[in-house]
Image (cartoon, rainbow, N blue to C red; front, side, top):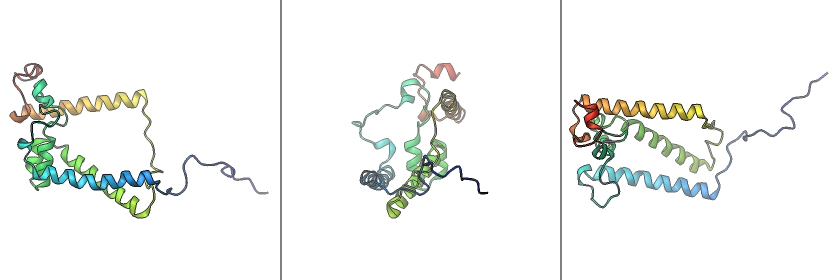
Length: 173
């Protein structure tokens, strides 16, 4: 006596294979593949201190609050990382390494998806935003910010600190 397969007759929530890319998905991947090298080239060519003043947010949050934000120094760090100066990149903001790594992984995935005409991430697990996961994410960001402030203060990164900011006097004595 054979037992019926419980999965027969039911459609799975996700396809067993990677679905083909829709035309709109192809366009977005092509835009990403064109923009990432252009942005990295611009970051490599321009000295961070010589950026035009007309750019939005010409004053960093560190200059406003007195303490560096999570990404303060990231532009300088990415600039030095692209020039192979890993020590300076690490000094300005260690997050440049995972940021560039993640961008390169996304670049490779998008290139593969265009080459194969398949959505390779369609079967990847989706993250659900619950109260607990949101709280964990918020706590992680606050802890990351505390680490950035600690590193800036302990290593005397004066270019990331503003003694006139309102939060500076609360942390630095």
